[in-house]
Length: 622
Image (cartoon, rainbow, N blue to C red; front, side, top):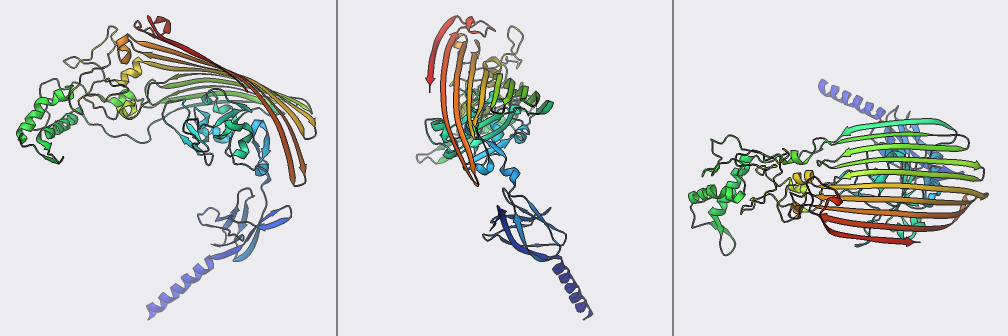
């Protein structure tokens, strides 16, 4: 009886403690703006520092249990956060006011116009310089990944400097391009987006819907990405910034373990034995071959294994006995190729160095920047190197006239080993299928590496073929046997880009609210592609080597004139803009190909036979 009374007493005390600890806070959350109060739906109410929270309902009402001393945090998009200290159970009213700093944040819109967030009516996503600077990207387009809702990014390869595929409105056409329009400082981009250094960018704005991008017409069918570069600040002392980043990359997930030469030979023997031991009847069902005994099947597999595989890494006849095991006298194969090691870098390095100077006085501001980037790809010989400079100057002549000059130059050099193709035609997939019994370098009968006249090891491009499914190297790129590791080393695929721009902008204030802006720009973009196929190895060996040179020269004049009138009437805003754009674009393309090259000659003039030449000229005015 005493124990029962004590248990009831302790239970009562515990219940009272829990009752006193839990305090019910309920009430209503309102939006208070311009002397107007209305219930606010969907407000997040959480206990600060904890994981417990609720949301206000359609009437702005809420209820939450908390403890004395807790702090309730009320937050809502576009509103200032409100904190409430819990002292007792209570019914409260929370009035939230707009966050004017957030709503007055300026967003760059089409043709360089600016609007505050409170004035936006279209679907727009913005990424600021802090987000961009915190990402180590080669192509600035990758800075948008995970930062803009509704934007899809697809990466199809690991070549450094390559641009991702971006989809803002999905795929609207089977044949036409679904890529968005890039606009840099008010001018549609000519060239490659990876010519711009990310440390020179102030912000990126994505115009998603037709209302936001309609002014660009059909060019904006797939959305628009506006890029604004840094400009400096008026009345600011010189600011010098030096940033250096050196790092490496390692695979996040380890790949599969590969079979050793011994395991591969024994499993190949087992598969070959089964092919002799079993057959199929008229219905296609698998049955024991009545013409072959298990002993005969095992001996046949032993006798024919090397002829089926085409290579013998042990250098003796019948290295696998009738028991399916490598002979115990064979301790070590003559070679055992680690194809992953031959293909991939252990840790690709990235070196990024930038220097910038910015500032300004009463009537002018400036931004000067230089950036050097050198990044390796995961595949040996893949690399991207870029040097980018930018000079932006702005001047306030007087209260009604401003001038801005924007200039940039960028040069890049890419080593692009052939990595395209599907299935085993892709070297990246090839390396996951090839066995370690196939040598990286050519070997003699003793297993020794064969060297060329200069003492360098020769890559094995052997076309020796067995008769089984595993009887040769997986075929790569063409119907002939390949050695992609040798191809990466012996062949060259080089892309060089030169990109220069010059913009002159005049902003003239004609009357209060009435502005005239003139933007004149010139862009020159050159792409040079060099493709060399070795004279002795690979596909072009039958013609003594092949070299292809291709050059694209893009030139564009662009003139954009705009007249804009803005007027506020109390709570209303009137904005009208008239825009005229003139564009003159030319493209000169020339291609030349030659065959039969001397050793180590990798220039077009060194080809004995000119095998092809072509070109094109394109001009557009709009």
